[in-house]
Length: 146
Image (cartoon, rainbow, N blue to C red; front, top):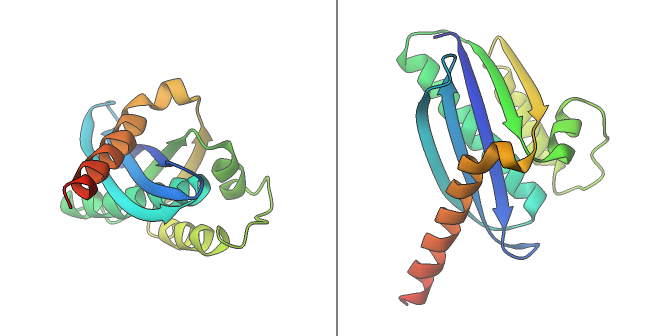
């Protein structure tokens, strides 16, 4: 396994508001090998999109390591056009809150042979979106218990 397909989504309820990240990682045969979500606290939608990508890159590194692949290739699919255009150097990063997240993602990409970023429509990112909403629903239920 030398290539992984990564689908990420981040979302917040409110902007800023409670936020979560959703990640789906597939092998090069398009088989799901990992689904994970994480509550990330109060952020904006764009920050959540970056945090989802950070989580995905960290997980991908672990997957390659567990398969004894030194590095590997990634194709990252996001429904955030802004984040993809930042990472493909098409847009400047004007929001100071996104700059450290961009640097974090960029540094993580150094752990791979190649990383490509693609924008996809939301309809093609449903599973990662479901992961975000499931995590936010779980967080709301936990908060309502206290």
